[in-house]
View 1: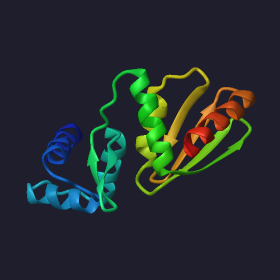
View 2: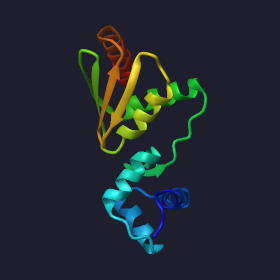
View 3: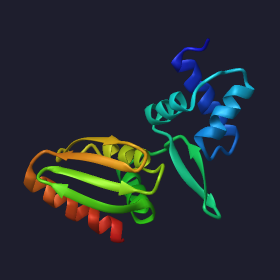
View 4: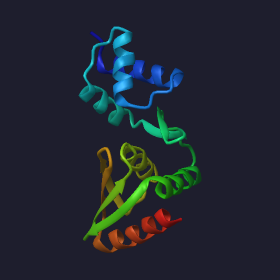
Length: 153
């Protein structure tokens, strides 16, 4: 039986060499290599590894490792993701809820985390929802306006 680290390394190897578009595809590829996992385990691995789903055309996507460098690159990528995949942003006091297309929340949250902004305490992402905690109510309001502008382009 593989350790979690070994399994995640195999996932990284698979998505590097193959175009994997669903968790089910990834489970099947791992099983073909003799690694027996459940879809729930693969889902947790994808979240922990902060894999992103990249569009490959004709409405299809593939999993990939997040590759982000300089702060300006992160902001540019974040703007692109907000325009393409964020559907709604709502706020209550200092907490924001961002709704994305299915499978894109972790990629967007990763970029928000990579900004390392003082006004963002942290993020939690699911499949299509991101929970963002701003430091204060005022910063939450300003952050919502800024992110809403990103969404609209």
